[in-house]
Image 1 (tube, chains in turn blue, brown):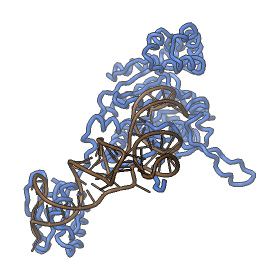
Image 2 (cartoon, chains in turn cyan, green; image 1 turned 135 degrees about the vertical axis):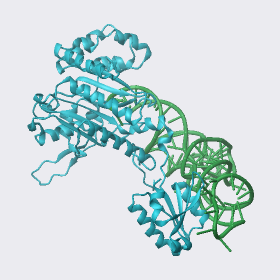
Image 3 (cartoon, protein in one colour; image 1 turned 90 degrees about the vertical axis):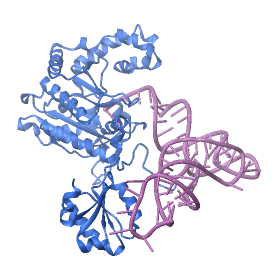
Image 4 (cartoon, helix red, strand yellow; image 1 turned 120 degrees about the vertical axis):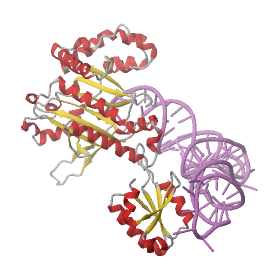
Length: 428
RNA sequence: GCGGCAGUAGUUCAGUGGCAGAACGCCUGACUGUGGCUCAGGAUGUCGCGGGUUCGAUCCCCGCCCGCCGCCCCA
């Protein structure tokens, strides 16, 4: 074990794949801008208490998947602080919202972020210990309209547009409402009661879940259990009138806008802060990790971490999973793009002149690969064909006459171009 | 964290208890200012790491690491 490797669950992203990452991020930024979102960047680590109180002490993420350590105390009198690498970004955004008094503006805050998140899970395809999320939050005081079902519908419509624009075809939007915390508690009891007479016929996992966390029974994938699960009460029946009306308004707006969705009564997300609307965009071909993105409303999160009443809705997309999906959908996405031209100096004596020419062309915005005069022309052609669309030959003749030799690989056509017209020719 | 399958050249993968292989890619030349096609030649490597069995282990056994599939969970 003498050579060092990237640690388990982490990886290097290399060209040409990084071009795809950049395209995804650029597209997301452009779409967010059209919906008038601004970017927020929060620290990669936070006080551990933020996640314990925000995400929920009992969730798997907090109870067993966080990278947590004790920071050194600065003074002997001071207690060491427990810090944690962020496992998600919503809690950090809401913390910043509170800390900077963003609610005092009275306006809705529309914030997006992108960056690495950390969870200590067993790695798998589409699941890494350091992974990247692109997400956005709409949050603000109720007077700014933050509770409006229109906000939910707008966010969902934006996501549908973003996925379409990214070229991710074949997604499905699964939608549900988990109501208020009181609704959820009521539903939990109803589920627990309904499971008593049937749980003995279910799988071992379900027997355990029925006791520890009845909601998770809904996630069971054992075929034999499905008919039983279908007979269980649905959370929609446990919602109070306000939550029912809210959800109806969300779906009405989606119907009007023509955003397709399916109601999934079993979609009960695992983070404690979710209320009312919850959703997931999924895609086949991702295997067990089929969720491209997930999100929902979190009307009580700000108060849970000591802030003012600030209802909100947000989502997080798994950028790694977007990349996997796009690669599977379209192999050509992985193809490297080529430079506009490769400059081939003929002889080492022309290297300096070649750099000067490259500088001129690059200043014109052209994408130039600079060769090496020590190469034989044959080798220059070989290298040029792999990295650029055209080759520009710079020999003594060209330098003296100011007329350069340019060959276009796709057509095989070779022409003489005056240096003053070269940039214009290469940009074609 | 649990169960299962894998790890050999840059890549995709064969293979055998006794000299480490193919294809593609790479390098050189045929061809001194013209690539792609062709031909000739060349280099690929701690056979994931450590231990054990054996005269001898890339191969068999054990442990570890890492990846993948499923569970769990989630993006």
